[in-house]
Amino acid sequence: MKTDTLFQSKLLTKGTVLTISAQARLVVNEENVNALFAEVLAREEQKENLTPWRDGDIVNWFKGKEIPAIAAQFESAIYRFTKTLSHELILDEAKRMGIQKIYTYTEALATVIKGILTGEVDENGTGIIAYFKVDGNDQLYRFLAWRYDDGQLDVLVDRVDLGSEFDAGIGACFSNN
Image 1 (cartoon, one colour):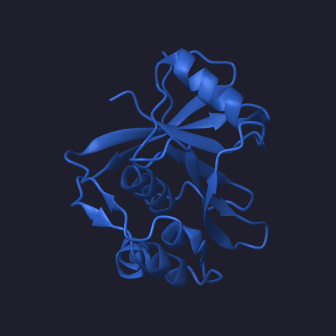
Image 2 (spheres, helix red, strand yellow):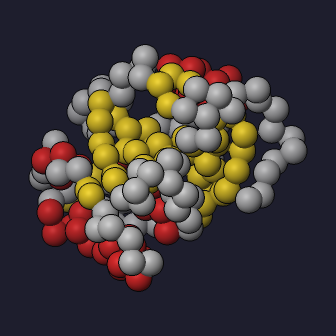
């Protein structure tokens, strides 16, 4: 894992930088979301892991919503927590450090999937978060990829409760570009 020695935070440690490819506009439906997850399913099957579980609300909450394209490739770094942190502390520290990025639905999902595919959620008890908003809704959401102690990979969506906490070692994906 590469680290950035110029990044100075007592709450976050900069880790792996993910390169997210440009993508076409997305209409949220089962077929399109399944296509995004196809490589994750194939990877987990090849590793003979338990079948990953994908939260149905990833489609249900946003079904039919048109999400803008990812116009150009971008980078997102995974910032691991040095201690248990709430969403509020995570977001405040990211803002203070100039890295806070609230993604679109597609950017956040593509980032979490890329993190899974690069092995960032391979160890049991690890996970990554990407925050996002959708047009026409001021609610802050997050995708979470999490590997349980039995090896089960789950990918979840939820509304952000600023008081919810995550253990040290979990990471949030941010970008300053």
